[in-house]
Length: 186
Image 1: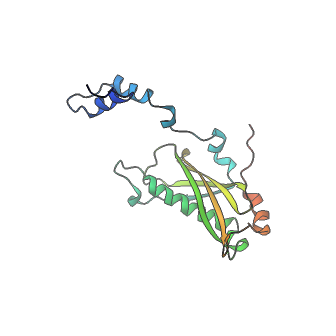
Image 2: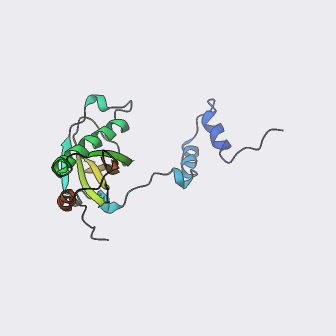
Image 3: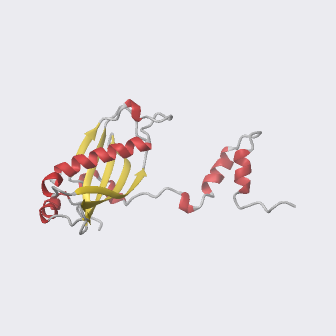
């Protein structure tokens, strides 16, 4: 006697049985029965309003950024976000106020909200969401033709010769104009 079939065994059998094609109803059943932990989270809708971000820049995707589905590849989008963070950091006075310190990305979370297509440019909106003693949290919203397509939250730590280093007073003061404003609903 074999082992009892797992909760997802019927799904695995349906997907791996190449002799039959699942019906539309069977496929929707698979999607509906997914644990909620597998469903995509969406950021707070207030964070999807480009007007709340004090910084923006346009970046033209390259043909080489495409994946097999002819969309901008997720890894390429991470590179676009990195480029926009550098532009934001320069505009916010980072090189001037943080001379002698390096930056290190401690964490990044990227939510892919929609497909991004070539050759249309993307606009990356950025803001400082939070300042810590040695770190800052940056939020970025990517839009294409007015649609939100990516939301990212990055924690950046300042590093000196001895390890994590405090943000300078000059940077903290200049960062005020780059902070994400409170939403009207907050």
